[in-house]
Each structure stands twice: as structure tokens, then as C-alpha cells.
Image 1 (cartoon, rainbow, N blue to C red):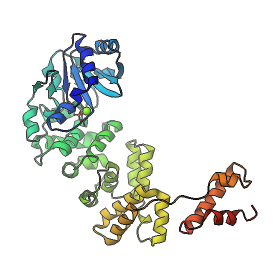
Image 2: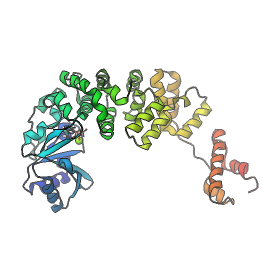
Image 3: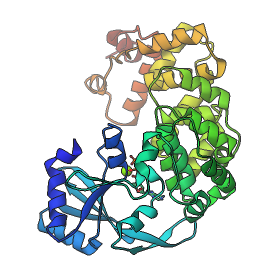
Image 4: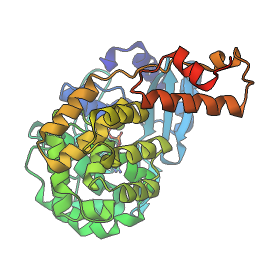
Length: 391
Ligand code: ATP
Ligand code: MG
């Protein structure tokens, strides 16, 4: 469908009008061949970045220099994004970052890419260009490095993680021997990678539908231990993955770390997770909160940490204890939960003469605690007369 978007045509036209050759490349072509939807469109061109910007601007399309040092411009039109990258080769690399040079040769652009099925090009007429045999590998779902795996990993060690994330998404259960050996060999050197790149690849892997076999392989090669700074709780991960719940990378991350809050937060900080992710981790790892709670306390916990947090805590605990009637009942209860609404508002207190400010906030909090402790039963009138008998 993305080929039919008017925005796609407008971007192609803008480049063709500058005299450029253009082809779609990478994930969008691969995914289209598999019948998968995507809205992440990469375009390769022989135009130099300056000319790309000029062509886009002449056509009234926003051009953002999102990766100028490696030849990438992002075109934005009607909120759709297109990454346009000039044909290039990697000249020298140090395992972290490559210095690049532009080229006019499509084959050389293909060879600097990572896996054969990521170097498939589609020209505007709809013809597939396959310089490194990606189509055949895609057909049998073979994740294969272009060239020698060890060399390619030495150029950019992030490719180790990319191998496993593409293996998780597209690999049949037949890992490439050379690739696996090369990944194992590089496991000790992954510490030098930029944490942002690691974090991004890690979530692409953990969020995928079925990351189990890839994680297993990562564990065998020592790559997983290198990334999570220690052993993985494989049992807990396995039972979490056996549950019929939506893919959730963060929950799986917590499971891999055995639900160990301190360890999870430490690693999350190192890998620069967002504060929101860290807050969620802290809640989901506090599993003791739900274990063995009487019904009334459980409802309080549900109200305080929210339905999502409660469900995540319980799932993580379930993954550690295994099939468990009690937790099944908790999950059932939480799924049906709608939070009751605290009946008193700031306005109620203002109209009874409590001035705005700290005191009002504190009083509301205390009233809410009283209300929760009553099993959400105390009414507004009762609460007001508890706290303001003379008003
Ligand atoms: P996704 O659908 O997950 O976005 P993708 O194949 O588009 O998958 P990207 O990370 O968006 O992956 O990269 C786009 C393309 O750029 C890849 O298909 C690949 O050809 C090339 N590429 C990206 N990162 C690397 C890398 N580290 N080494 C070599 N080639 C790379
Ligand atoms: Mg992509």
C-alpha cells in the first residue's frame, strides 16, 4: 500500500526531477515481499545529499538532515516520513562507527548492508533488484550476513544484535552456523557499543512476536549475558512467553532479570531507558505486593498502582511460580476491574472554606486514604462530615 500513497510518488518525483535514480530498499521491500505492512520507508538514490535537499525543497517537501554524516535526509510530507540515503560504502570502521564515502554503484551500496534480505531494492516501475541473493534467503527465512560474518561484525558490532532481532522476526529455526560462531566470538566486545543503539535493538527483539528461540541462541553464545550483565532467568522468560498475552518488551526484560527490581533498574539506567519505563519496571518488579493478599487489600493495591501495573506484577509472579489458580483468579479479577472514582473534589473543599494550597491538597489525600480503607464505600457526605464536621 505505501507504494500507492500520493506522498510516495511526490517524493520519488522530486528526486527524479533532479536527474536521480531512485529505488526503495531495506525493510519496506523485504516486508512487502512477505506481505507485511510497514510505514518505515527507505529510499536509496545516487543523488548527493545536497541535491536531495534541493529537490525536496523545490517540490515543497520538508527535508530534515537527520543523518547527514552518513548521507541520510528525511523527507516529511503530510506526516509521512521517508528516509533517503545516498548510495555509499563504508570506508573505515572501528566497530562502532563507520566513515563513509558516496558511490554511484548500486552493488557497492548493497554490499555495505548487513543481511542479504535487507539489500533488496525495488525500482519505481516495480522491478525487484537483488544484488546479493536476498530473495532466495528470504524465501527460506535464512538470516545471512552479506560477506564474511566475522568481518562484518568487526566493522560494526551492533550487527550481532541485529542478527538476533532479525532471526527473531524472520528466521526459521535454522541459525546460520557462521553467523552464530561469529556472534559468540564478538560477545565480549559488545560493551563498547553506544547504549542508545543497544537499547533500540534490544526492544526491537523483545517486542517481537516470538523472541524465545533468538534469546535462547543469544544465551548459548554468551551475547545475552554480555547485554544484561549477568545470567538470564530463562525459566521465567519461558513461562511468560507461554502465556497468551500481548508482546511486551519491558515485561520480558523484567522476566529475563528474574523480576529483580534492583538489577532491572540498574541495567535500565545504564541502557538509558526513559523514566516512564523505569517507573513501570519498578512497579512490575514489586511482585510481593500482590502475593497472598486478602481481597480487600488487593482492591486497594489495584486502585493505587492501577490496573496495568497490577496485571504486570501478577504476570511476572505467575511466570515465576508457574500455573497457579490463585494468580489466575487475580488476573481475572484485575481484568474486570474498573477503578472507582474518588467522590470528593478540590472544589468541594474550596466551597467549604478551605483555602487553596498545601492544606487543601493534604486534606484531599487524607480523605482519599480514608475512602480507600473503607473499601471505597464512604460517600462524599460522610467524608466531608468526617473531616469538616462544622462546615
Ligand atoms: P525494520 O523494519 O525493523 O525497520 P529495517 O531492515 O528497515 O528493519 P533499519 O534499522 O531501519 O532496518 O535499517 C534500514 C536498512 O539499512 C537495513 O535494511 C539495512 O540494509 C541497512 N542497515 C541498517 N543498519 C545497518 C548496520 N548496522 N549495518 C549494515 N546495514 C545496516
Ligand atoms: Mg527500517
